[in-house]
Amino acid sequence: AILQSAPLFVGQTLTGTFSIANKGGASITFDELVLGGRLNGVNDCSNYINKVCPDFTKIPNPSQPQKVTLNPQGSPGDSYEYTGTFVPALAGTYDFQVFYRLGTQWIWKISNVMSVEVRSLAPAQLLSTTGLNGDKLAIAQTYNRIGGALENQLKPFASNNDQLRKLVAVALGVWWVESKGEGPFGGPSGQPTIRFENHVFWNQWVWSQTGDEETRRANILRRHFNDSSEKGGNQRVDQWFCRRQGGCDQPADDGSVLGDWVNLWESKGWEIVNPEPTWQGETVQSSQAQRYAALELATTFHLESAYRSISMGGPQIMGFNYGALVDPRDPSGARYASASTMFNAFSQFEFAHVKGFVDYMKNHATHPKCTPYYPHPISYAQTQEIYGLACAYNGAGTDKGPHYQSGYNYAKEALNITN
Image 1: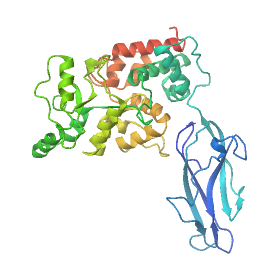
Image 2 (image 1 turned 135 degrees about the horizontal axis):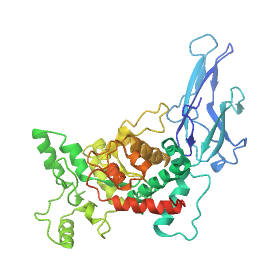
Image 3 (image 1 turned 45 degrees about the vertical axis):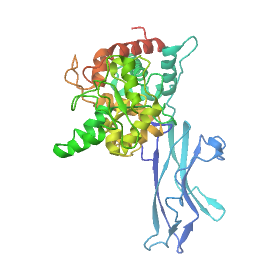
Image 4 (image 1 turned 90 degrees about the vertical axis):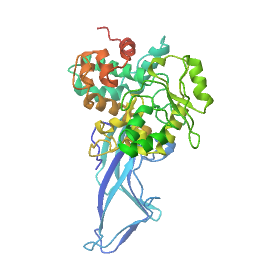
């Protein structure tokens, strides 16, 4: 059986199981045992990547080095329960069945064939990018890459095809704003695009404590990450980190001129990780390499708190929201167990970003100060109340409303939505 239910997408981890039993009077040892696959009926696997067959986990393997032995029928150990995984890299129809090898001979056609359809993230019809440039081109390219998965995941929230197209336009606009210029995998080695938030890390690791322990942690952390907010609050000044062993001294005065302030911090060994929000569009920005360096440093204090303190992927969802998102790799449909688990999934395939975005829109609780008030962001998308969506998605006090509106307008134009 394939445990994940349709629809299935390229890059999604599939789990396959079967039971095999010995019907004879002698034991049998399999040199290899696998749930083997073929794509679109091509038996020699010449149509798959590197002409390697699209198989689930073979046994034996490095994590399970022992061969499977079945004892004679009727004795303990006369059957085996197989579980393996497979990540499809190409779209199409996959046929899976049990294969085993004895010496040099492969045996198959001993089980029913399990057929599954794996979809591309791309839409059925790509947008023409002729004549497009800049932001409009970026939005069209995003649609051509993931538009099919967005349509599939958003369809339950649309009453008709027109509303579905507008929901997709809203999604494209959000992605354009949140990961603008960097895409979903902008990390220095192709990891998910991230933004590290000092104030969230302080909230997670320091302000979650009380008394002497809070003081102890604060004294340690302020030499590596400046506290950029009021206690437990939102970012109010620029966020810096210091990767020197033992940390760095913080400047005594922020300074009154932007350039002086930057030079003052940098002269003491600090690196910018997250400029204060009003700096959007200014030249002082942090690189993905710096953000990953800050994340790595934070993990040395507390791994889970560190991953809860980043926004990640195309939709830039904060790690502390992990409990609102379903892990698409889990056959039971369970939500992520941790922020680090969410990051691992976002690192593996872009469908995790798409599904995570829709789950967040559906499950995230809107800040009560957002107006008009709807319990979840998806309602703002359904009614195209874009400024309200910016608040519901980012929290009260955000200044992203105009950017969300521009993104939505660009996406409508790319999708030829005229009303």
